[in-house]
Length: 92
Image (cartoon, rainbow, N blue to C red; front, side, top):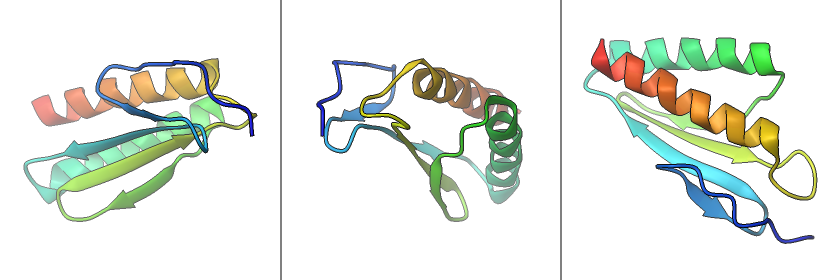
């Protein structure tokens, strides 16, 4: 597998093998978690990209894997927009 270039997205961990962006979002209460998941689903449909998710009551872990051999514009755009959605959700 080809190594990912040094892509950095604020707040996200970059993994090289396999190429992936990883972030854990924390929320104050379950309602915020659900709201974020709903917004993330809408973003996924809009961009045509579906990340790997794990969640519990107040946390959501998002893994944005490369669709090709390395991370590209779509994955970076998804990660940045997911961060914006989380910030909006946390602000209420």
